[in-house]
Every structure is written in structure tokens, then in C-alpha cells.
Length: 113
Image 1 (tube, one colour):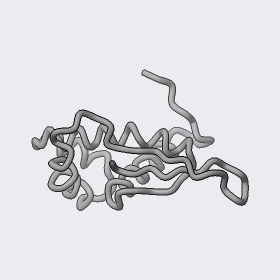
Image 2 (image 1 turned 180 degrees about the vertical axis):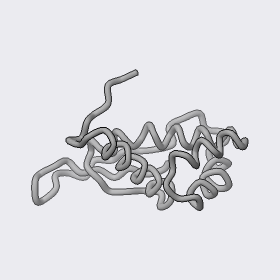
Image 3 (image 1 turned 90 degrees about the horizontal axis):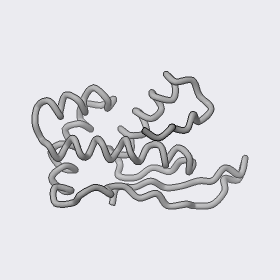
């Protein structure tokens, strides 16, 4: 397994942030964040969509244990999963936007394809 970015946070905060960002991405279809965070969220979101494609109770409960909102899990299994049923991976796209004005951090948009 590849070494993950620490994103300047302790493990529990980093895990909570990734959960929240993944939930928000699946809820809204796209989010604007830093490039490093976007690169970390992408594989997690891909795993959630892969779970949704299985469409069984065990997979639903696994997704529910990670996502922070139950209605997002419902949307994932009833709308997003079937939409990507014939696609083998590559459900997200990370687009660079340029530097942020305040601290020049590289910004990116991560979106569902």
C-alpha cells in the first residue's frame, strides 16, 4: 500500500476530514479543495463507488460505516452506483485551478466523472 500524505494533521483529524470530504463529494458531485487533499480523497471516493456497484447489504453497511450521512449512502447505492455499473474504475477527476490567493496553495476541483 502506498504511503499516504499526512496533510499536517494527526491521524484522527485526517481520517475525519477525509470522511467528511468524501461524503460531501458524493453528495454534491464536486468539491473545491487543495490539490494534495483532492489526491487523497479520490481513491476513497472510488472505493465507495465500487462498494455501491456490489449493491448488497454488507457493502451498504460498509459504506454507511464510513460516510457521515445516511442519505448520502442511499444516494450512493440508488443513483451513483447504477450510473457507473458498466465503468471499470476512474469515477473521479481532479482538475488543477492554480494557486490560492492567501497562501499560494495549489487549488483543485475534484468531481465525479
